[in-house]
Length: 160
Image (cartoon, rainbow, N blue to C red; front, side):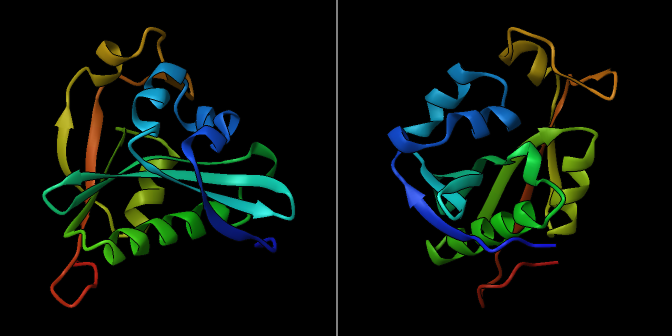
């Protein structure tokens, strides 16, 4: 059941770091991209229940740097609404492609594929070289990162 919520942009200094850390365990990595990005927060009343960060990478390419939903609010459609918002925001900014990086397994991969993202590259050993601490999910260590993308067609719709 989707809760009553609104989505609005916030400055990087007002970004909910606790939520961003749900999707990216490295505060150092978050701080590296946050200032050059646009941060959008899903609010339920006064409470931040979800967030995403998107960055213009140049050459009409945007990257979804982070997307997260508060643990107590997961499974309510908030993440899907945030992802839909991010896809539309990038389109409105004139992007020809929206990219992201994610692990090679787990619920996140299916989440992005359901929204129309397709694999465009594999970055071998990404999580081993970019994070000080190992990242595990379901007892498996993340090592490689997948690059996924949604391509926008000339009419402003995703290409399938």
